[in-house]
Every structure is written in structure tokens, then in C-alpha cells.
Image 1 (cartoon, rainbow, N blue to C red):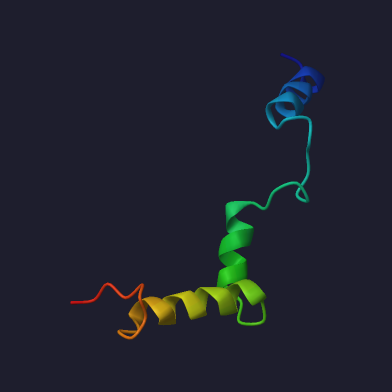
Image 2 (image 1 turned 90 degrees about the vertical axis):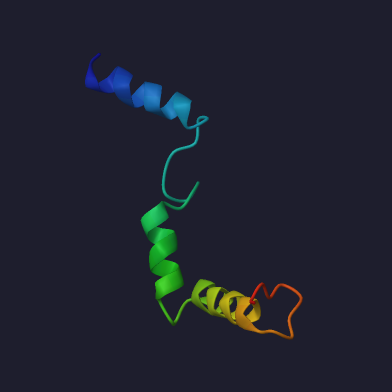
Length: 62
């Protein structure tokens, strides 16, 4: 398989949409949740706090 047909095959597998704007890579998602200046970080921390709060319905402590 030559380089051009390999890239065409990858393009078809991705549903005809290529590029980072279509979907974030897993490393980007991890970076976002580790960056305190990112809204994803704040959501992750809120979710963690809610899960650890015994007054919250999602609390699964002992």
C-alpha cells in the first residue's frame, strides 16, 4: 500500500473527517483536566468533590 492510499484509507476509517478539530485526542483530554486554568479541570474537581460529599446523592462512601 503506497502512502497516498494509506492516507485515503485512514480518511475513510475516520468517517471522512480528519483533523484535531473533529475529535480531541486522549492526551488533550488529560491535559485539559490537569490544567487549573481550563473549565474541564473545574468540572472534574466539582465532580470529585460531589462524589466525596456525604450530603450528595452520588456519594458512595461507607
